Amino acid sequence: MMFVISLKTFFKIFSLFFFFQLIQKEYFNLQVQSDRRLMEIDTELNDKRTKLQVYEKVEQELDEVVMQAAQGNELLTISNGN
Image 1 (tube, rainbow, N blue to C red):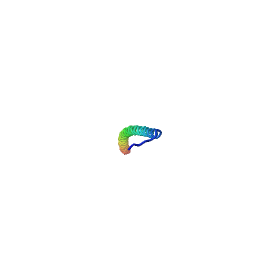
Image 2 (image 1 turned 60 degrees about the horizontal axis):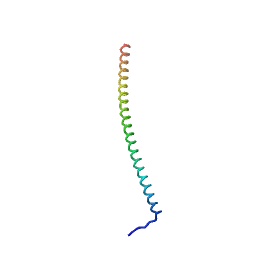
Image 3 (image 1 turned 45 degrees about the vertical axis):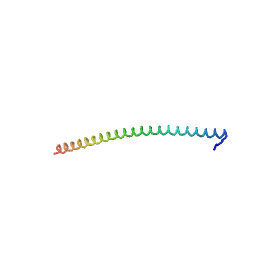
Image 4 (image 1 turned 90 degrees about the vertical axis):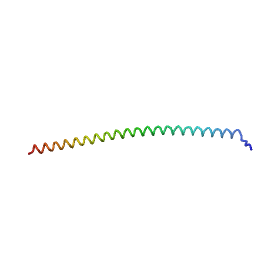
């Protein structure tokens, strides 16, 4: 069995196929760009988490030093008051 189509129909089919290929290629390019950006964001987030952990540790250590200093001042005040 043989199918006969007009030249006009053939070009429409060819154009649609070409358009589909173009759209598919663009989709894959966007997917790659999206994956790259997601990896960049993930890396940046991990860096920020690490920095936050360091800042929180420094804050905790400063709080401890301030509390120790405050307790030391209380002892000095009590001993000087007697």
